[in-house]
Length: 260
Image 1 (cartoon, rainbow, N blue to C red):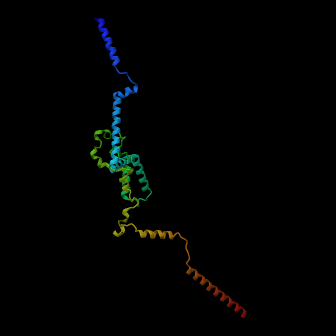
Image 2: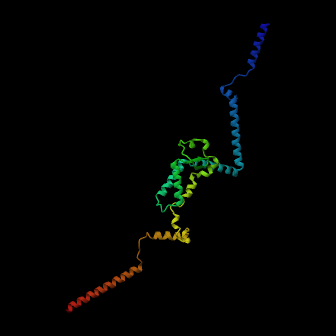
């Protein structure tokens, strides 16, 4: 009885072994694994998405152009976003431009704004926050290296709802717009013109004719001086008359000498 059970179990094992599939290569086993199935599904999804994008762009070119322009503009804004080093470099450049001018010529608004930013920078309170496509320059209460309790405690830091009150400048597409706006006409001191009449305080741009006239006169000022023909004739006649008078005087003197 026991021998019969052993024989039956052996036959069943042999039959299961014969019915089992022959294992393939390592690549086949990897494709049939869970990771392989997941990768194939992901590749199929991306393939279908790309095909739909191409087909949709071909069917709706205007919509596709708008989306492409938005994506390209966003990438350009992100790539040209200025950082804190760029802000400090721009600030030093503006300070150098104002330093070349006399205090009587500097614009009060430009000078005051640059001086206040320079003071915050020297105190270590000038910070720049990156927001992806743009950057914000704002003032903080303390230097980041300060060891005071008020400077290190996170509960006493500036809340986000007060950030808009501390913003000093906005950096976008490689420029700091508020600083550039304050530096407009930095070499014009408006205080000097307050004593002038109202009609002389405001100046207007010259017209096209005035500009052309000024350019023509400027070019003519570099040309060599030319004597007109009439002046040359007058000079010639004057010289001839002077010579005749001299000759007559000499002839009269000779006659007087002969008579004497």
